[in-house]
Image (cartoon, rainbow, N blue to C red; front, side, top):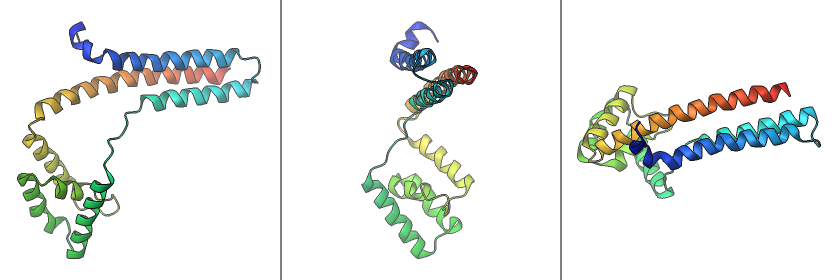
Amino acid sequence: MDDEANVPHEAALRSIGKTYDIARSELKRAYKSETLSALGKREEGKKIIARAHEALEVPAKERTTADLLMEREIRDRLHAEGADSVTLAPRYYKALSNGDTAFARAVENAPAAFPLLTDAMREHGEEETLKRSPLAPQLAAEEAEHAIFRQITGTVRVHLRELEKKNQIY
């Protein structure tokens, strides 16, 4: 990426770098501590590294309680009808083509213990949703950005593991 392409990412990149720098400085401080035993230093190091890993996690997109209740109601009605993946397929594809996101999400977000879709149906649904989205180009660009950040955070995680290994030496 050239410098111009990095401008919108600078804050995120600084944040990722800062996470590593903070972890490294906290580890140095813990190692130099005269009040901690060797075991205490290792345990403190583990906590510091764990916090750094948590800081690199991408927060999950939250759904509202109203969304969850609506999805549950739809699934309850489907269950009462005795719906399975074979009988549900035409209704699911119709919901996708009509833009009925509430029905589609309810079916897609069914608990893993009681899935309503086959893997093939789920993949088809994701493709259809992306095709129909007016934001498809923007979503593709965001996915490319996320891939870059996953690579960067992966590199930082490698460095954190190296710090963790050093922590085990002390």
